[in-house]
Image (cartoon, rainbow, N blue to C red; front, top):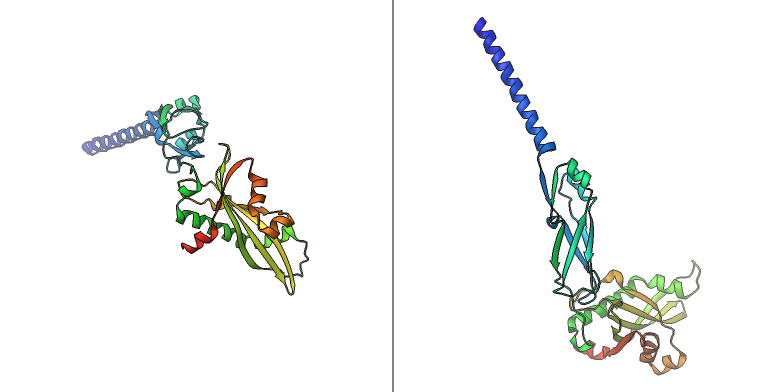
Amino acid sequence: MEQDRIKDKALYFAGILSMCILLVSVAYFFFLRTIQIDLQKSISLHYTGENGMASLEVEVIGDDLNQRVQEFLDTVLFEVSPNTNLSNGDVITITATYDENLAQRYHYEVKNATMEITVEGLQDRYASLEQIDHDYLSAILDASETYVWDHENDIFSLNHETSKEEQWELTRLQPCYGAFLKSKSTSASDRVIQIYQLDFKQNDQVFTLYYLVCVPEINDGMEIQTQDIFGERAYLSDAEIESGDYASYVNRVFGQQYQIESIDLSALDESE
């Protein structure tokens, strides 16, 4: 019996010792050990603008991190220098500031609070219309026309008084003129515009207006930012309409800010 009691006590103390070791290990793992946080691996870089005129936004990525690390990363602020008119090949410095008290409390060792990054991947503007890829230009004009069909009700209601009982329908969409507008300023993107004649019909009534659609951010990345396409009514003079001199209207409205090259829409259609 005495041996059994000794054996039970030994097992009891062994169990207590094991639990103490486990608790100490858990405490060390969660509260005492130093954890390295590499900020360079915890950020994503988002450039806005094109080669020679870009800026950088730094964003923390941490969806797969535990709540405590995410709480710390949410305190981090980034300063980029320089951060205007960036070009491919530029070396920029990203400096992070963070809650140092929180870092000490959680035993975080922050790495790469200051880092140098070489700018790359920025798109270039086209020097002229002839540099634009044929398929890309066709896709731009198609996106322009799709914008009109998608917004036909808004276009009509903003330009013609009507009642709820009236049922107007866009029955004709005729491209009249297109142009590549190369910005004279680094603050505005290059764009392609197209003027349409729109005929809305209800019974025997016809309402005609001229509408200009603008597709901005044209560059050699050959992407179409459909969310940025916009349109406005083109207020052509009677003489411009009668003579089909849409180029004069575009030059009158955009000539000071852009170099304008007309697009041969008929040649573009024939080549498709």
